[in-house]
Amino acid sequence: MLNTFTCAAEFIQVAAIEALRDATNSVDAMVAEYRLRRDLFVQSLSKIPGFRCHSPEGAFYAWVNIEDTGLPRRKCKNFFLKKWALPPSPAPPSAFTAKTISVFRWSVLAVCSKTLSTVSAASR
Image (cartoon, rainbow, N blue to C red; front, side, top):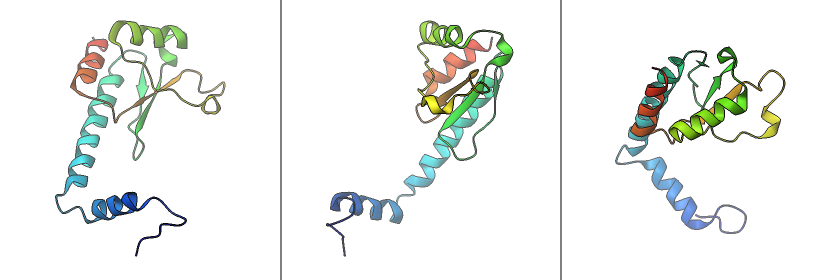
């Protein structure tokens, strides 16, 4: 029985049920694809001199510390934006403190082969 009074719309509930049934194994395929994107992206970013990036275990963002580059945050961000059209994902201001001002986050969901080749070129 669907709840149409206090929960998500009926079509959303039906979609959720279908996703949970997953007769096509598309969820497993998607998880494997995202894992591959994450691993390649993190490995490529970690090769850039001064970048430190740990692989997220369950998050959709890779947090990258640029402190060892010696570059100001804005200059590093502009470099990626202008040279490779690869801006970091926006993070809420509450995510930044004096300790995290040298940290960027990139969405690993949006990573594609073009992004990976961009990051790979940056590491050379």
